[in-house]
Length: 238
Image (cartoon, rainbow, N blue to C red; front, side, top):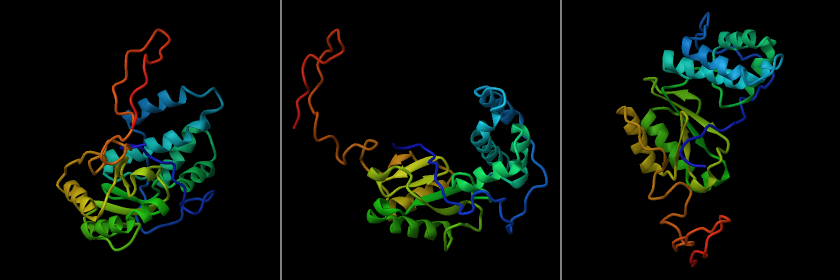
C-alpha cells in the first residue's frame, strides 16, 4: 500500500469507557450538516432494518470530517458521539467504546496537519527517530500528543501503518508520506506551512513500493495475449 490510506490503528488505551475529561473545551452541541446528512443516508442504506449500529465507524468518520471542515481540527467531541448514538439508536457507551478504542478517531482537538509517525520496528530501524526529531523542530513541539502553538501541527506516535517496505513513513491527515529521512521531513513540513500539498507517497525516486532504482526482474516486454488470456510468451527475466 502506498500514498493514501487510513489505518485502523489501535491504542487510546481506555476502550469501553467514556472519554476522559480534558483541558480543552468541549462544544455544547453538535448537528450533522447537509453534507453529512446526505452521506448518512447512503451509509445506512447498506444495512438492514435493526442493524444500523453497524454504521457506527463510518458515522464517526463523518463527524471527524465535518469538524475538520467547520473548525479546521479533525476530532470527535463527546456531544457528537451522543449524536451518533441517537441516530443509530444505540447506547452512547457503545459509541464511546469504538471512539476510544481506535487511534484513527481523535477524541481531542488536533492541528490542521495531524502528523502520525510510525515508530515500530521496521520504521525505527530505518530512521524514524530522525523523522520524529525533524517534526519536533519544524512544528515547534517537544513531545507526542502536543499541538504546535499556532495550531498548525499535532504530533502523534502510532503503531504500524502497513507501509513497512517504504519505512520510515508517517501519515499526514489521510495521506501517506514514505521513504522519509530528516531532510525530506523538514522539507515536507515547510511546504505544508506554506499552504502547499506535496505529492504523497515515496519521497525518493521510487514508484510506490517497487524496488529503489526501478525493477530488477521482468524487464522484457510482455507479448500479445492469446484467446485464453495467457501471454504468448514469457517476459524476459534477469
